[in-house]
Length: 240
Ligand code: F6R
Image 1 (cartoon, protein in one colour):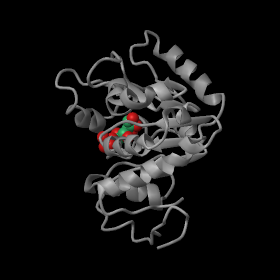
Image 2 (tube, rainbow, N blue to C red):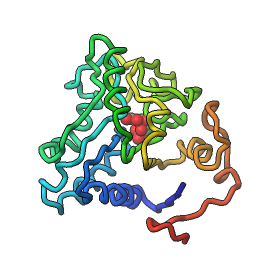
Image 3 (cartoon, helix red, strand yellow):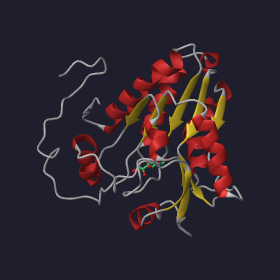
């Protein structure tokens, strides 16, 4: 694991985008897992800007797979992740991507939808999975306590997540979602997790310093990264 500590959100976003750029530059077919959420807005802004310097046809080999979606929700609903992706990424680069994949929040049969997505994901591992981090430590919509062997499925959201999401849903806040599992995420060849903010410090500390476990129970008071040393890495792996 490499930990890159940045001074600002913009700097972290530029880093994350620059770590993805080699995937867009390679000629081989690439499968990229994508996340949504406030953290991803500046990351995608940086990515679209960095991609802007490339010729469109050069990224036709990239397929994308979004991590999760509320259920039930119409893809055109302003709070859906499909809308988020259209607004922040796909409106600008979709024509140049090979294919874009989503868990469909309006699927009548959510279990069948998850099986279908699982088959797509299992066909071949993702080259890279981009992740944010929930305040309570969730990744995708895998809430604390989720098994490491979990795969794509419908889940109930935790009270913390529902409360936080109420910002985007002035009406009825979704209580359920479709998400890929921890096992799916861990099968990716590379994972880039981006997180910032004091409210995520405890979850990030646990993620970086351990102990590894399924039992994270939410923020606790910690003054630093659990008192352990964290190396500052540059992209080429050299310590600073
Ligand atoms: C969304 C997702 C979530 C978010 C997490 C952080 O696709 O996978 O796990 O990454 O909730 O969200 P923000 O960035 O809004 O704090």
